[in-house]
Picture 1: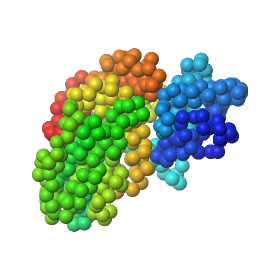
Picture 2: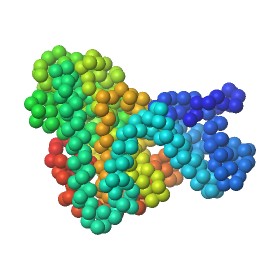
Picture 3: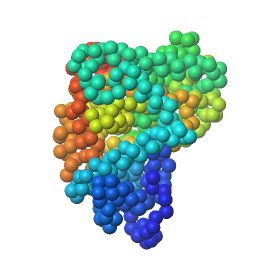
Picture 4: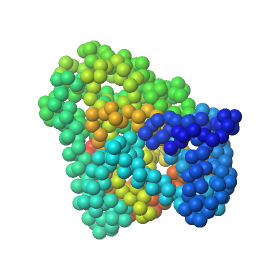
Length: 459
């Protein structure tokens, strides 16, 4: 979106802190002020305006906000820039233009969906996968928040829970069968995906399926390969960044993978998320001749993660929560927002991490996904949808009451504008949702249990 040549002198461009942005397909391109000016101007024209100078001035306000929020050399995403543009329009009293700008974004989204030649929409996910998820929701009358809430009120949500769980487990079986077709060649299965996409539970379930089919299987938890907290890279705000692959000991991971594939025994480390400390040489681990090694990781598709293993030995499996549910305004719920809700619940009880911090740090979670995951999706052997149609009513119960305080905390902080915008958007979404009060209708082996607790699995 920002890759066209700028009309402004090079000296003016150099005054911007932001030199590049991350597009929706993961590519980094040169930041272009003109595209902000033009998008604002088009929105203004749509509501009867026509002042290009004013559009330029508003674009400068967006640039100033960007310069205040993002330190030098930061690479924000297109989504972040557009969110800030909407906020600037509202703050400066251009409400009609802001609404038209939002509609413009929505129309651009539909145009991207219609590019049949590429069959690619948000985050490099093929259109056919999106369409499959959406048609299932339409057929089961759960394609809108309103319809899902109606099922909660009527008590028919139990049926939706059962259907959603069946659909999820059917996908698990399909993946397992595909792996078993090449069981004599595949030595490493990589389950990759963005934060809170459901990698851990899905990994466990695949291992169960393979075991039922007589194939021995071994799980390696890459989370134990995090470096000690004081060794972690920090983000542009000085916070420890768990989302970059360099927070992991990539050298040790590759050393251990190579040894395991060649029949040697290793001793894996153990990482404690509450203390931020790692202990080396804790658990003895061996991969036997007819066993398949399975790892789940945010960065499983990142080549340096498994560079010691030949490509023919790998099966790459990608998982994302392809939530195809519309809110009351007709906008699709963002996949990243759904995953943030998952993580907020899990981090609060499992990792001793305050939900407001999860929101505050989500900006670099998302940026890391765009940089280290999205560009590699086309390389996977299977793309899996982990979204369950009944999730939002579950998270309404756990998180709705705490959002006002989160919004209040981040609203006055200019460095946390992204967190404020996201928190406000998600809070307004949850306002529309009818909560599920009785969680006993959720099976103990459900993927959702990974986040809300009460699972029959040990994580």
